[in-house]
Image (cartoon, rainbow, N blue to C red; front, side):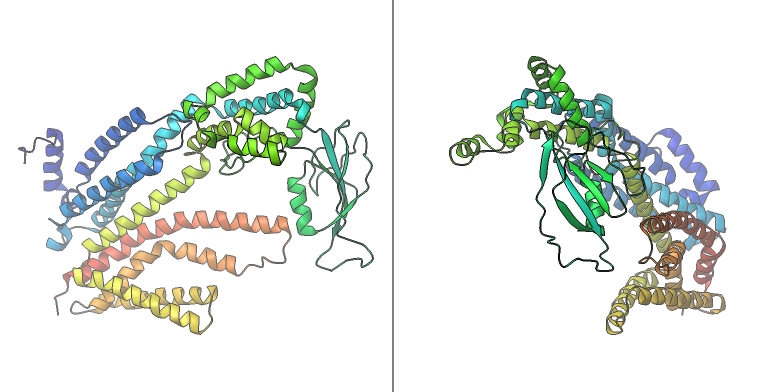
Length: 534
């Protein structure tokens, strides 16, 4: 054994000790796996930190994950080959229930360590991006870039406020006036001399305007359109329960207007208040036009371009909204808009893309993505360990017959639900029926005189599905709740309860699985293995 030069001497000593004193732990090979997993993790971290490219460029995470997946598959195959060499449980059966539980936990830790390699590319990108850039820096640069462009291009911009009357109709009661022409939705424009009210929600405090512009148009919307208008408008003044004044200002977000990253995938730990809204940017531009010089703003624009653009951006026209040929064509045949000129002149799509790339890397392990990735790692590790644990407590024939029976049950159950026009309720009924049926059949192991495959197959199904029982119960509870006639606040509370109960059910399900392995499942497997063959 000591002739293996790739294994340190201390691992040999640990291996000898476990073989003589803890054969069940030794058979999991956890000591070898822990060492080599740590080594591979360190090598991958060092390699990716060294070769990782500029955070401003698009991510190569997917490429690295695919390459590392090959290493993961090879490692899992080698590990399974080691486990097939010796099985203490099947050879002697001389271990207690805690040995069986520890073997499952060690299997789970082993798979978690190996599967964790797939997260290393995103971790290195996250570390490098957060070291070079902060959220405040990105957002402040974007705000200053937009403001500076507006000052430089002020002669081409339009400073106005669009004003509309809005009447919300009760569409559930079909309240429509046949004498009113609802198609009249002409917008009135007024000079932007007075500040509109800040945006208010339906339940927020009403706020008076310093000056009320004239209103000549009335737009009729149903309640759904009203909520959409409330989210998208820059300012809304509440006049009564059904009457509102909507203010819409020009969009000066040249950089960030079409940004996907600036609106989605935001984590709870990412600052939000310092990113200017369109309304805030509009009045910042009004102030900047009066106080700042074009030369100063041109210097700011050049500094931000040098900071975020790379060499290829200045050579590649794809970073702009359209190429030079299109611009010349529009000059001759169709006058381009001022925003198209600005985008082409100031590389705003290129700046936006580079900032988005940095943000995407910084969000790799924010609160939302971390929770998702840890859930994925947990489920992959648990299910892999569970299948391996079941295989080492089964004979080959009943273990693989379990997959065949599961496939047939899924097929017949699907046909049954289609023929009976059953939907969610039918699925819940069949799931509960199968679990109770398999539980009864599995308990017959206690009364068997010889080995029978059907009780062991039933036990395999019980072991595999016990973790999901609490989640199943929460889903049944949520299904039976009245959700369609609730107010929006009540519906949000119900959704929050459902998510909270579902998260709690995962902890309860894992606890049930651990208790089941310790008190029930390992004993039933041991009882079946000890029976004489037919």
